[in-house]
Image 1: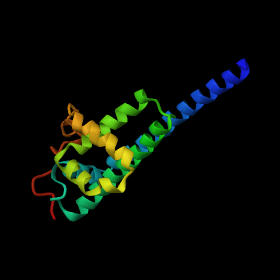
Image 2 (image 1 turned 135 degrees about the vertical axis):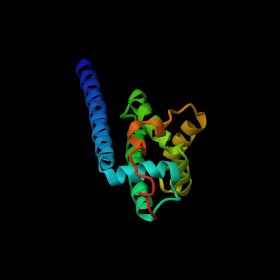
Image 3 (image 1 turned 120 degrees about the vertical axis):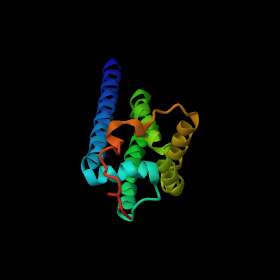
Image 4 (image 1 turned 60 degrees about the vertical axis):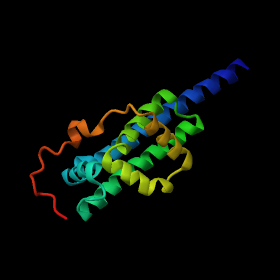
Length: 154
């Protein structure tokens, strides 16, 4: 019995470690999209001005934030199944919710929220309703300081 208990505990820890590694890997892949300066600029414009932005940038923003939503949906599934602890899940919930309270993010979310897992949507909506989220637009990698006036065209 002691051996079985030990094996179950070790298996649980291995699954939790694997879940954290999977999430970290997925987050790095999702974040890598923003290394491209064109995608990064589109995302920065999108969180401020979606949907009133050039059509190419609108598609890039929509693709990037959808990828972020799908990443979070995977994170949520692991949390909901019990293989990701709340302490590991909550930062990702907060991070994605920060994007949904931006002017562009909130409009995008209103248009697309029906395409995602209903439980995940409820979790995000609850987090957004709680308020007190960090201001993601103030972060340096979403700044538009280096975008020349008039360089963004429709």
